[in-house]
Structures are given as structure tokens and as C-alpha cells.
Length: 262
Image 1 (tube, rainbow, N blue to C red):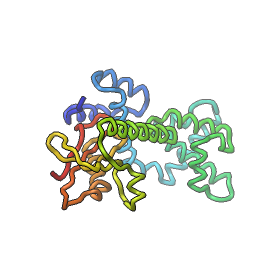
Image 2: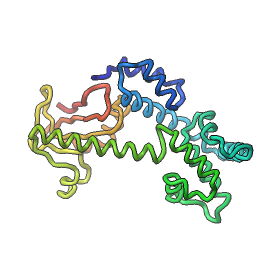
Image 3: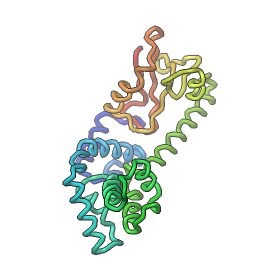
Image 4: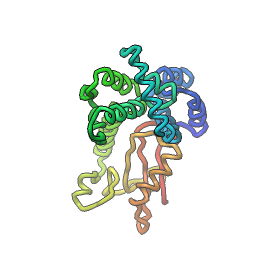
């Protein structure tokens, strides 16, 4: 099922005032029952990430960090078992995993002799049991498991979905008896930037000649299409052959695929 631009705009507009929680996702599904859960989650995640990028700076001022840290200390001082960090993140409209990172960095700065490295922070977020304070470890854990858009758990899920769909795409190409080279084979031949698959024998799709396929584990809105074209896809372009491009989207998109340069 193809999602139209009007349908996408309606969903995106609905998300403007919706907090990034699983309860919000359930309400979204009730309002748009014809759309799959995967489609709504993908749009939900992308729109929320845009919001976080727009508001990121205000949460990282020294004043904001100190305010959040003192509120965290006061909250766990009253009740260490309460989801203090999670509730704080929801109150200030910031991703729980990112709030957990802010507080963890501030805690380590206060309790360690040397400033914490990025690798140490990332390791503790992936495995909160490494955090030297049990209360903070539990608070961070609550943020990680309740964040549906950011954090190491979400990253693992995205990676797994991406790998799964690359396998599905490969199986589909083999099923259709199409001859192709994958990324590993292309890199072995000395290619620097490579699509997921290059078709050794181009195929025609709805009247267009397709030479290569790139898959993305995200919703294909207009902003994403333009960004990927600029950052990645144009480097695959061969003007002498007037190659075309098919963008295989792993969740429903505004269009089934994108074709460029006919």
C-alpha cells in the first residue's frame, strides 16, 4: 500500500503535539487504522528526531544541565525507585536516552578524576550495570527501555531490521534470477562508495532502466530523499550511461520507489 503525500501530511500534522510515548503510538494507530504499525512508528520516529534536532541546543547549555542534574538529585533523594529521569525527560520534551546521557556525563564529571570519554559513556548506556551508582544505573535503564526513538536499544533494533531487509532484498533478486554484485563484492573490487546492489544486467521497471539498488531502514519522506540524494546517491551517478536509481524503502513511503535521471 502506497502512502500519499496528503496522508503523510495528515499524520505528520497530528504528531506536532504528541509526546514520544508508546501510549501516543497506540492513539495514533486508533486514529489511522488503515496504516500499519511499522509505518506509523517510522513516521513518528522521524518527525520526533527532527524536533529533537531543532531543540537540542537548549538542553545542553550549562544552565540547563545544572538544572536537570539538581532536579535529578532532588527527585532520587525523595524516592530513588521513582522514574525521576524518565519523567523529567517527558516534562521538558527531550528524548529519555539523551536525558540519561546528560545526567550520566554530569555525574561522572563530579565523581571521576578525569572527564569521561565518549566510549565510556556509550558503554555504560549500552550496559547500565557498569554505572558505579546503583540508583543512577536503574534510572538510566528506565530511560533506555522506554525510549522508542533514541538510545542503544533502538539502534540495535534498527540495525537488525536493516540487516533483515537486505537479506530479503537479496533473496528477492535471486528469486527473480537477476545477476548482481553486493557491497562486499564491490568493495573487494576497489569501489569506495557503493550501493547495496549493482545489477550486472539492468532491468526495466515501469518503463525506466534500473542499474542499482540502495535500501534504507527509514521512512522515505521528502526531506530524507533530498538528504540521501545530496549525501550519497549522486556519488553513484554515471552521467555517460544515464543510470537510473531505485530507492527500496523498508517501510511504506510517499512513493513505492524513487527513480532519477532518465
